[in-house]
Image 1 (cartoon, one colour):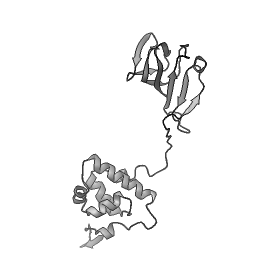
Image 2 (cartoon, rainbow, N blue to C red; image 1 turned 30 degrees about the vertical axis):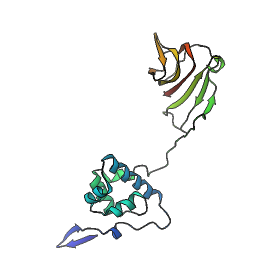
Image 3 (tube, one colour; image 1 turned 90 degrees about the vertical axis):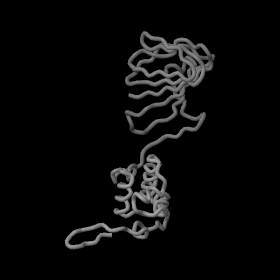
Image 4 (tube, rainbow, N blue to C red; image 1 turned 90 degrees about the horizontal axis):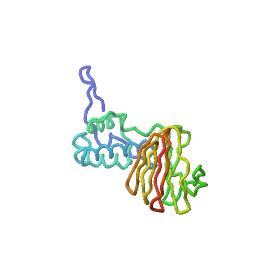
Length: 212
């Protein structure tokens, strides 16, 4: 509420009823975004709902309504929340501008793809892609079995990260060789020739993440 006193504009305490009207048709997208951000920043600062209520001058019941997306916040309430959480008001709307692409892949799923190593018995299962993103990461689950052979090394633009899940192998990059087993990882420049040199313990499974 805004009061004008002696030519000055003062903000007075706002009641919970004035802080926002309950949504009648279920939470909208904006309410859900604000709820998510308020809860995220409150928990990140290890604040209880009661502590945030004290900081903002809102009731604990109102904080609960906001975090459950069951009320629409007024501009004054948004400012109080931002001040109480010590963040800019715009942070409460983060993610509200547009939908973002994401790929969810269940265990054992993913798209099998044919690459130069396929003819040597190597299996490549792409775990996700983002549409229209030339800079996106490409995670691939690589499986080598007793039907697999070593083969000429790869070279490609960008970088690659390899994380061993099971088995044991000698992996080459340029003039260097790395004996890798479960839990080991390797980050490399893709321009350098790289790939498995010796398959020591089969089956071998590793996650290869490339970025251009």
